[in-house]
Image (cartoon, rainbow, N blue to C red; front, side, top):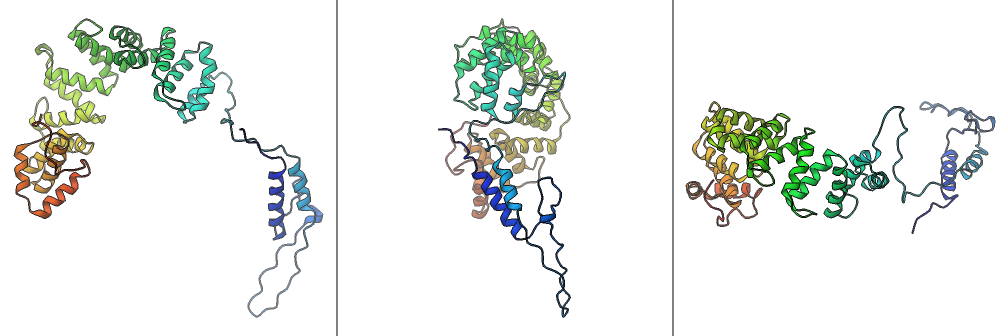
Length: 382
């Protein structure tokens, strides 16, 4: 049931409130906005000094003001109901095209975005079709529906929208909302890659690297990863570094691997932070620097990476890049072990701690695992 504002109630409330304020002493305004002779108020008298008799005349009574304000308020239209009212659109600017639906989406007004995008999408607007796909895929403002998302992405991609081609390709790659089809996913990635969309280039490289949906071609994969990395795709930077470290012998290059691993690490890629720390620690492709390596391990460890936790525990246990600190070593070791990375050498540190230090280490590890004293479930350190 739609709620409607009751005419007159708001007006009476305004009038009553203003009347109460005015009766307590205030400025009376006539309809014209200038002081009315009948409503003029004498300035308040100055407070008398101590021991001095009070002087000055009392303020003239206010008459007629509340009546006039009430009459004005009664003539106003009732306030609109907030139910079903969407945010107002800005005034149009000559020569400027504005996507109001996407603007509403950016501000979190998902139902408004839906209502604005739907008629445009039905008329063939590919940007609106893509936006509807995003709304259905993420479930913002309406129930999540991967099939409808795939349908809208497919329609927009068929009409040349490269962003929709990327999203549809990802759904095809993973079989979400549509049957898995890696070859068709590659076709969609190719459409977006031709428009220099970094994420599409990265995913297309993955297909060439594995030979799924595209012929196995490590040279093409390397070329595409390089292009996506240069376009600042952090996942491509990490994979390119991995490829340079662990790929076929003819593409291995530790110096280039360290360069791209460092780029990805500085952008916050946790896996890259761990591997760059290892490269820094061992001096592979870059000058050795144990304190800096410890910094990278700590960044990744505080993000919850158990391998980084294990490396940082070793740093503190053996004084490599940090001062020796058995309690911190034990704390990080317990956290890593609780997340599946065991280390028999570090288990020996626990036995050598006094009860207070061990309790402090366990309390620290509880920030990362529920029960740091549980038996380890993981295998040996990677």
